[in-house]
Image (tube, rainbow, N blue to C red; front, side):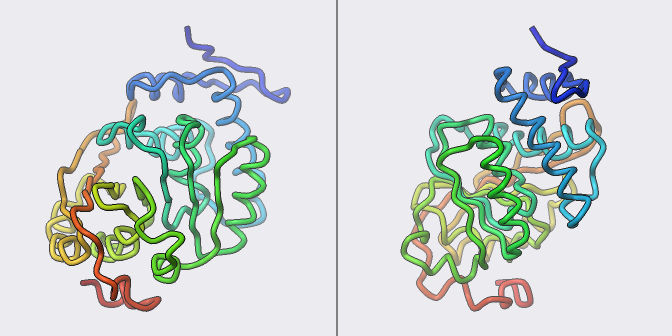
Length: 249
């Protein structure tokens, strides 16, 4: 019972790619959730005229490469077992906002080092009427030492473009023991994943599995790296701002 074509704010949108992609992932969206995705799309495109949020602006491409891609997390973790999520280096809100729209029960924290992006995310969350979403302007290296955030989340996600060893140092400190860090990577990340094993171990994590697949309806290869937090992160990590990226563990 797909809507396929939706008149939204006086424009016709073909929502089939979004709905079909979600179906393939086992996610069913209500009419309200589809409208939230359309509002998010419009908000993104409008703001993108004045600041650089995304190079992908075509409607169908945003549906696939941002929204469906963000939601593909369900391939390696069951969202109903999770209550709290932090998205590190969220940028324009991926994957955090699509995940929150699809799974409204989640408490989501979005962290980004650029205040302009955080202001955009605040506006967007208001437009989408999302509750239990917190925006933080700052660096992961600083906030991961803050007792309010350190080891407080069931799940940390990141689609940030950084080496996995560095990402582990940014992200694993936020995760509770027995929680998970899910890193979104391209499908050709085998070597990068192998070389992150040491960093992972030092930070209290263990690479459990890597799901490699094509985005629904495309030949775009993706990998999701599922890292379980098996023990607490030693106090000295993460190191000072800038060091994890310059000198990965």
